[in-house]
Structure formats: structure tokens, C-alpha cells
Image (cartoon, rainbow over all chains, first blue to last red):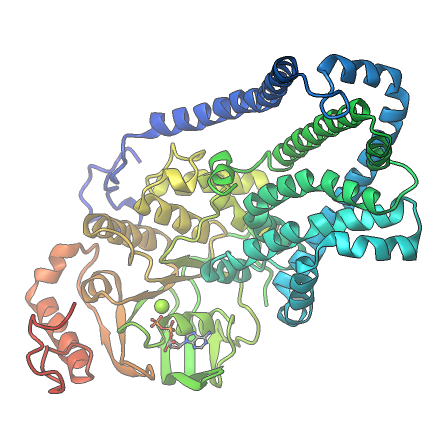
Length: 298
Length: 285
Ligand SMILES: Nc1ncnc2c1ncn2[C@@H]1O[C@H](COP(=O)(O)OP(=O)(O)O)[C@@H](O)[C@H]1O
Ligand SMILES: [Mg+2]
């Protein structure tokens, strides 16, 4: 590399002069951009955690102010203080039922993610399967889940199973679509390249199809996470022996508005934690990937 | 077939490649499209062959056939004396769009080749860094594709195609999306790298000058269905640069190729079809 000044005549094959390639002088910029984007992600996740807390505090203050100003009857809007004392009185009942509902939501979300990704990638990869499975999937997606829930209770009773099925039905669609979108978005030339390298089946999936779907999946998973608790509540409204949805129904039935509010606040808190947890899981699962690539899609 | 492996020594002179009476039709809902017909030519080991032709004449199809990624409707492809019947993976591919994986750094994009082939990781990384040095992109190992210019992306793609030291390199309009100056630099660098490695190269282009500066032979294809119009041997001394295009014999050759393409309806002047009177500057768009 140091002897390039000699004429190119002698052994052109070996000592061909190296023409200096045009190199944009932005190396430092690139490093800086990479660093600051990582820093930005950490800063952003702290804010992500802070915003819900701030919003909640603001909501409680507003709520207290409204009650103080308009003095509505207690069965319509209780004061935050009454709600807090109701929570302290019934914390065991609230927490055990919330735990039941949360378990259903998380189990449903988990099954939905595994099943949805399996289904989504199978559909994306195998044309005949797409033709057979996608239309019924779209049709069932259009049926309101609350219309199916009573039927599931008839079939599977009042336990966790029908509720989990409702959660799966509510959350699976975005995950399936994320996989098909990701796979069909891989350019033809990339697929040709992969085949020319001999990349097949699992390697092709792990190195190309899965990461290509990652931004879509990250978004879909967070949507699914925010829908999971809603699905569980719907199922409990329709028919269940326990769960926070059942507590809510009873509280409203007995005009215990303070307990209703306590349950709603608890649901909000748990929902936020599920969402934050889902975000953390997503970050963890996509740790090795280009952060700006993920950011540009989700 | 021999095992594609990273630890075998560089094959000094590539491998030879023969197209024997190739014809190819694509079946689609709208019926059958004849893409190639009567393609019959040979590429010697270590030769740089350009395939020149208008858009849609079947150039990309020809590369897919050569790589065994597509089975020809008629005829056979023979590589290194063996008939190609399945994907022939002992090759490197470079496409117009670079086809980099956005989520991987430049270095890890190059190393995809090693991962796919189960090459030794440490050795492959050393070679990848050498290739990045050779193509003038060292220092950008950790940059993501979106942070690279078009020329640099193509250089990464070239490094990836060369990582396993394949005897054959397929390049499909690799500089088609680059600006003129970057393209000129890429032509020079490609020639230099080829002179050092002497692989067999099949280089698809629709740029007459690019074909003449780079290739030992230029195969000119005519429009649909793609068939060989002429094969020219380019005897200009190497290393060549774009100034070689100003030499009288290469000017004559460029002219000849243009005439040939024109005779097959590739370049038409407004009004030459006779069907659109007043076409010059007055049509809608
Ligand atoms: N997968 C395919 N299915 C149907 N027709 C195709 C397919 N690939 C290419 N063709 C047709 O074959 C012809 C040659 O295509 P291609 O090899 O891509 O041309 P080029 O690379 O020279 O532009 C075109 O008419 C194109 O429409
Ligand atoms: Mg093409």
C-alpha cells in the first residue's frame, strides 16, 4: 500500500495505483448521530415513564377541584379521599381480582404474540395458506368481540379460558398483519441475494424476515398490549366468576361509586404498567438492531 | 458440487461459464412472456463480460439463470463444466439497489455472507476489514446503511459479494442508481479489484461506455425477446479509464453498438413512428 507511486506499467495486476475514493468527511457526524440517538432513547424512556405519572397526578387534582367546585352527590362522583379510603378498606378484594384479570390479559397477550407471529409468518411465506386463512381472519376481525364472548362462556364456562380467548381475539390481528407487512416488504433483490448465499428456512427467517418485520412487530405488540386488558374486561362483563370486571359490575350494581372509581384507577395503573412492560420487552427484543431503523417505522 | 467455504484458497482465475441455446418464458396470468431466446455464448474463466441491452430485454433474467435461481425453459447453463440444476451459491451478487439490510451496520452487512455460509467468524471479519480498506470505506464499519452515500452503499454490497472469494461475480446494473461522478469512480475501482482478483464477472449494464471501459467482451442483447445481436471483444489496454472512450477505435465501437441498437428499434426519434404528428414539444406532458 506504500509503494503506489511507482508507475503502473510493471505489474498492473498487483500494484495498480490506488485511486483515493471520494470519502464524505462525515465520519464524526455518523458516530455522533449514533451516540446521541442512543442517549435520546434512554432519555425518552425516562420521560415515557414519567408522563403517565404526571398525567395521573394532574387528573386527580382536576377531579378533586371539580368535586370541590360543583359538589355532586357522592353516588355520582366521590371525592378522591373517599375513593382512597374505599381502596384501603377493600384492597385485598381489589388486588386479588385485579391479579386474576391481569393474569388473563398477560397470558392472552403472550399466546396471541406466539400464535399471531406463527400464523402471520406462515401466511406471509406460503401463498396458498394466505388465500385460505386471510379472508376468514379479516371477517372474524370485523365481528365485535363482545358479540362472541357470551358464546364462549356457554362453551367454556366462567373460568379463565373464555376470557383468555377473548383477549387473544382482540390482540392477535395487529400482530398477524405486522408479520405479513414485514415479509412482503422485503425487496425482491434481497430475497435473490439470500438465495444466492444459500440462506434458507430458519437462517433466512432469523437473519432477514424477522428483523425486517421487527419495526412493524414492535408497534403491533404495543398496540396489542394496550388492548389486552380491555379484552379481559369485556370478557368479565359478559360472564365470569371473578376478576376486576366482576368487581366493577357489582360496585355499580350496589351504587358503590367510590369502589367503582378505585377499580377504574387500578385498571388504569395496571394498564400503564402492561404498556410500559411491553415497551421494555420490545426494546430488549430489538437490542441488536439499528435504533433509527426501528424508530423510523414504529 | 464443491463445498462453498471461506477457508479455501483464492481461485486465481475464476471459473468458466457457458450458456447453451438458452430460451426462457415467464408464465403469468396474462399468458406467457418470452424473455430470452437463442442465447448461446461462453465466458472464459477470469473474463469480464458485460451484458448490454435496453431495459426489459432479459438481462436480469440471464443472471438469475446463470446463478441457478431460475430454471431455463430451454437449453442449459454450464458452470465449471457442470450443468447448473440448482441454486449455484459459489458466486457473489451485486444489485442496483445495494440490497443492504437496514438494521445492520456496514461491517455486519458484509458478514451476512459469512454467516450464511458458516465461515469462521474471526477470519471473515479480518477479510471484511481488508475488503473495506480495498474499496475505500474503512472507517465506516459501524455506520448504518442510511448513514452512507449511494456509492458507499454499493461498495459495501461489493465487499459482501467478494467476502467468500467466489469464482464468479454477478453484477446487475450495480452503478445504475449512482450519479455520474460516483459511477466513474466505481468503474475504476471495480476494474482495479477485478485486475487484482481476476474473477469471472458477468456485468449487466445499459451504459455503452461503462461496458467498453470495463469488459473484455460485450454481449449486446436486442429488445424483447432478448436475443444476442452481437458480441464484441474489447482489446483496449488496461487499466482503462473513461478517457479510453475518446480513442478512435472505441469511438467507432460505440457508434457501431448504437447503430446496432438503433437498427433494432431501441433509439427512436419523435415522429419516427409516424403515428403522432406534431409530437415535438406540443404533447401534453
Ligand atoms: N417473474 C417474472 N414474471 C413474469 N415476467 C417477468 C418476470 N421477470 C421478468 N419478466 C419479464 O421478462 C422480461 C425481461 O425482464 P428482465 O430480465 O428483468 O429485464 P432487464 O433486466 O433487461 O430489464 C421483461 O419483459 C419482464 O417483464
Ligand atoms: Mg434488470
